[in-house]
Length: 510
Image (cartoon, rainbow, N blue to C red; front, side, top):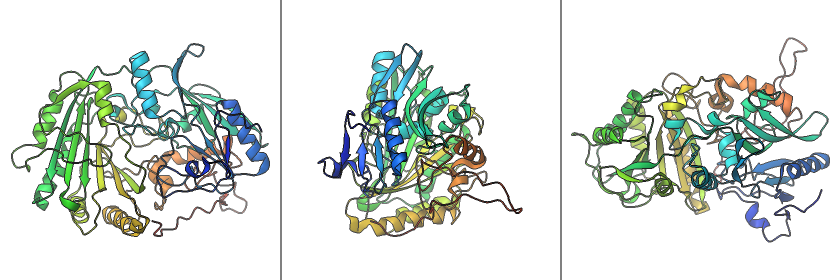
C-alpha cells in the first residue's frame, strides 16, 4: 500500500497522531495503528484491501462528529479519514451534482449556493461531515420544505468487500443492479456496508432567496411549572396542526431549546421561514406569545450551538445564505452525551412534568438541555419504507444533550441525562406507540436496549439482507452497525451470527 495520499498515513510517531485519533466529542480517544487520508475512491479501495489482508479493523471518519466512539474507537486498526475528499460540484460527465464524503456541511451550503443557486436540506452544524450526515438521513432547517437530504439522493460510490475478501468500488444507483444497497445508504447509517466516497444528486432544490427569522427567550427566573407547560404545550400543538406535507407551513422550521435553569438561564426559541410572505411565521410567533403565555425577552447568551440575540417578535429578513450562517454553529470541542426521540403527537402532560423536574433540579450545568426541533412537512410525504429512515409521520424530533469540559463532571452529567431519558420513556426507550416514534440513527446512543427497532423499525430485516449481500464478512462494524441476518435453521431454531460483543456497559466514563 502506498502512503502517497494527500494527507499520507499518520502513524503513532506522526505529530498529528494525538489530534487525529480523537473525535469532536473529547470523550472518545482511539488507539489506531494508523489514520489514512486518501484522495480518491481507488485509494480508499487500496487502503481497505490492505487492512483486510492484514486483519486490521477498519473504521471511517468524515467530520468526526459521531456522538459515540464508532469512528475513532479503533484499537490497532486503521481509521480512514475522508478529509481530503471534500469537494462539492457539478460533474458534467455524470450529469449530476456530487458531494464527496469528507466535505463539511458548510462546504456544501456555500459552494452550491454561490455556484449553482441550489440548497440541499443539510443540517445546522457547519463542521459536520457530509459522509455521516447523509448516510444517516440528514435533516436541517429546510427539511420541512424539501424533505431529508436522502430524498434527493440518486447514487453513491461505495467501497465494499465481498465474500472472497476483495475490496471493490461499486456505483449504487436507485434503479441499478445495486439498488438494494443504494436504498440502505438512504438513512441506513454510516460504517455499515462499506465506505461511501461520493454522493450523487441528479437535482438539488433551489436555494431560498431570503429567510425570515424570529428569536424568543423566556427567563427561568420566576417561571412556574404552569408557564413552562404552556410554552411546551403550545409548541407541540402548533406543529401537530401544521405538519401535513404540502401546506403553507412547510417553509417554517423551529428549534425550541429547553435548557437547564442553572445560573438563571433561559429557554430559547428560534424560528425560520423561507417561503415568501412570512405570515406563517408571524402566526406562529403570535401563538407562542399569546395572552396567558409568559412574556418573552431577548436572548442573553448562547444556548447549545446558536446565539441570535434579537429580542423582537417581528420577523427579521436576511439573505438566506447569511441567515443560514447566523444559525450554523458547532460549538467548542468538549465532552458530551446525547439521546434522541421522534414524536408523532404533542408532549403528554406527564412528560412535560418530567422535563420540568429535571430541568430545575440541582445539576450545575447550563449546557444541559432538551432541544425540540419541528418536523414533518415534506419529510412526511414519503412512505416509511421508501428509504431506510422509517420515521415519516413525526411532528417533532428531540435531542437530549449534556456538555461538560472537566472529566470529573462526567458522572453527574451522564446520570442526569440517563435519568431524564428513563423517566420520560422507561427502560425500553421511546418505543413507537402512536405518540413516540423511535430514535434517530445519526444521534447514536449505546444505552438503547433495542436500537435495531428504535432506529429502523420494520426496515431492519431488509437492512440485514443488504448487509449479507454487500458485507458478508462483517468487515465494517461498530457497536450499533447493522447485523448479519440469522443463519439458516438447522434444528428448528434460528441462529444468529453474533461475535461482536455488542453489550453496552453503562458506566461513568467522564
